[in-house]
Structures are given as C-alpha cells and as structure tokens.
Image (cartoon, rainbow, N blue to C red; front, side):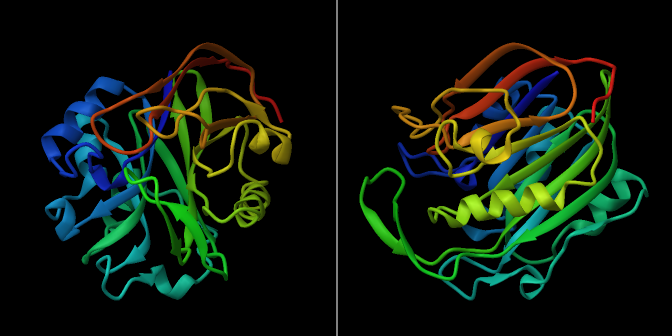
Length: 278
C-alpha cells in the first residue's frame, strides 16, 4: 500500500500565492496514495474559496472514507478559537459506519485542522487533543525566509482503525507544534494517548522535529529518512512515518514536490505482513 503525509499550507502555492482547487486535485491524484494524512487543512475558509479541502482530496483519491478534524474555528486574522475551548477529545468515537462518523464530524463554520483520507474502510476513529505551547516562539514565514514571533495553536492527533488488504492497521495523523521542546512533549503525549490502540500502528504527519529525533523519542521504526522542507530546496525532514508493531517490507520512499505548499509530500510504498505484532 502507499502511505503518504502532506502539509497542504491550505492549498497555497509559494510561487504565485494562489489557492486553486483544480491544482489541489491534480496534485493529490499524482500521489495516488491509499492512505493520506493532511495537515494545515482549510474547511469553508474565504482564503481558500470556501472549499472543504478534505472532501476535495477524498474525491481526487476516489476514496470513500475520510474525516476532517478541526483544531481551530473561525477565520485567520479574526477570532481564532480552539475546538470546544481546547477540551480533551481523547475518546474512542464508537464503531458506527465511517460514513456516518464523517458526516457527524463536519463543522458548519470556517475551520482549520487535520484530514485523514483512506481508500481502505475505516472501522472506528479516535481524536486526541494536544494543547498549544504557553509561550510565543519565532518561526520562518513560508516563501520569505523571515522569522515572525507567533502564538502557538491547539494541536490534535486523529487516528483511524483501518481494514486493509494486508490486514488491520491503525493510522494516526498529527501536526505538532513548531515550538522546540513543546513538540517533543506533544509527541510523548501522543504516544501515551494511543498506547491502547491495536498494532500495527503508523504515525504520519508534520512533527516539526528534525531527522532521527522522532525515532529517538519514541523507539519506533522510522519508515522514511528523507528531507521534506522547504519544498524548493529540502534541507530537513519535518514530515515523518513512524511504525509501531507489524512486519513491514519497505519498497520505496520519496519526498514529492507538488505545485502547492512549502512542504514536500512524504510517500512510502510498503507491504505489511498479515501477522500482527504487539
């Protein structure tokens, strides 16, 4: 199967600063992923033409199973607020159909967050809240190379329990803080929050942690070692695929430059053995 993670930068090109839904669809089709985790995803935002980006991605993948999970509500530059006031969302959401869960999860106002899209059926979902860092921190602005002092935002992890042709698989999508140290704390909290979920399990996402650090923090297998940021001249790997349990045969790894975003998409082609491992 082909696993991928992609920080969308809400579908914006760093070359012409435009957001174009057709460009997004073409980019996603070119990845041909079976499971795709998305970060910096817009839903009903004016800046992205009020597109429901996770649904657009699912249509481009011809995938029936998907979910958007907001971490922020409102419009950038306006009254951003955390989902449900930052309440802990770490609960299994039942075993009803993935289609019903998807419809129930959709916001009715502008939002921003994570998306997970799968061609394989989703049996159940889990969401874990990851609080924002308490202090502002400098971050390089996409396409400018200039730092700006920013306030961190609430984060989350979205997990899906899948039935794949290779057997059951748990996939966790996340986007961790850009604040050094705080992102490491969030990763440890994530690891604790998914401890009871079934193996094999893969975490896919923009961890804002470089190179081998996620593997050292978790002790899990790192399925990909390739630079993913910045897209035009990658120097560091922020986007990762970490595996717990299972027996994986990795066939290829690629950091794919697409006409949108300041990140490259991380793509891993791998086979998971039918045997399950704890």
